Amino acid sequence: MFPIFIPFLYPYYIKKEDARGLVKLQRRFISFTLIGLTIVLGIMQFAVLPKVLSLYKEFSIPIPFFAQISSSVSFFAMILLVIVSTILLIKESDYSELDQKLLKYKAGEMIKSQEIINRKKEFIWLVPMFLGMGFIIVSIILPIYNLTNTIK
Image (cartoon, rainbow, N blue to C red; front, side, top):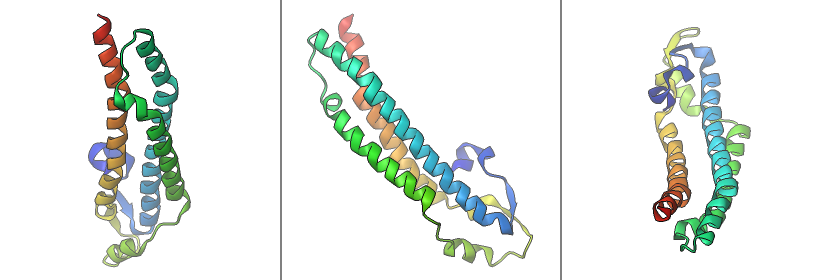
């Protein structure tokens, strides 16, 4: 969950009535993070990679496999990330689990936000982030590193 990594994104205590708003905020953070990954992936694939590939051709060095397939994989990954982000932004949340947690609190009572936010959900959404960044490293950063090592 983001409070583990960035504690100021969520308030520490909230009123019971503000719990649904906090869940919506959680979904927005996840969605905007996935949109950010899409933007970074697009910039790397369509601005940086073509220049790297042209350098490989100029120096007659074989292009690494992941660099060859990265454009098509990135295109489909970006489409998928945009679709998932849009669904997260548009679709209404299921509040049944939240309502069950809130039954034990009185109206106006202050609640720790960590008791309400689903940490498992946030860790699950971090997986595409790590996979996306790993793909960028393998398909773009490592070929740049290999190219600079061969030019020496």
